[in-house]
Length: 107
Length: 228
Image 1 (tube, rainbow over the protein chains, first blue to last red):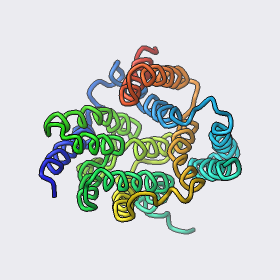
Image 2 (image 1 turned 90 degrees about the vertical axis):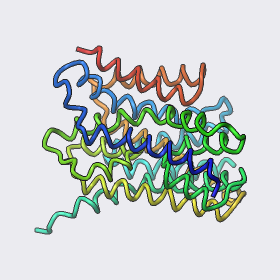
Image 3 (image 1 turned 30 degrees about the vertical axis):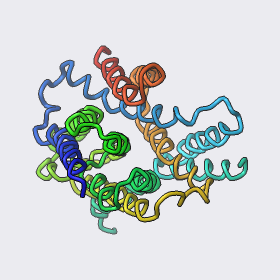
């Protein structure tokens, strides 16, 4: 095992634990009820999910219509299945399936 | 009347789309690690100890280019700083009575996707439970570590023979985030989502993908804070 790799992994892993677990253990969300911090924190969730969606879809966007078609098809499948079933799992699986099929058909 | 299912099993079931999304990404991480000259054991150690996708790919680039250890570590730490916002956002939705006795263990699993799925389930009216968090987190963690090992053992080119399967699996994470976004969508959230999305696009194009994520999240949260 490479010593440098293990050191970097342990430092980054320890920081990850601190970032993820410590705010939950200390219930840092309770610090300012009703104040600006609460509004900030309650907006963090939706902001994070919106950001992660944009970051995940951005590399797939291209002016090449042939390459874009599977992305559009997959996105429409997610929207359609979610509207019909209100299921996150169902919509996700349908999106991936339709995207894969569209790649296969256009490829 | 049938007894309710244990929350742990509910969490494990809810981890399914994350598992299917993580497997191919972790697999490609394992492949990339062996290509960069690391052993399967080292790839396994990175996934087990760091457990943060994008920063692990960055770790490969830094370590194989001989970057100094402390600079590499601090770069990875800065990249994962966004996770500090997830716990408070989740616990705020969970409510004051939510137990955090075992948070030292399950909160380790609060990745982007696990956080999103957990928040989505609370937004849909499900009660917070540590058992659910364990199930959700364990499914995702196991998929990440096992996918890495499979990729490292398979070596390069394993998914290249199946482009449609690879593409479909690769679309799993954007699809999951879109579905989660739909599940929390409400009139109050529209300005937050719009600001976060626009800033992510602008910062990604102008600076880098990591800055895009960090600044987008921050701008969206600030937009929510400014709202009365």
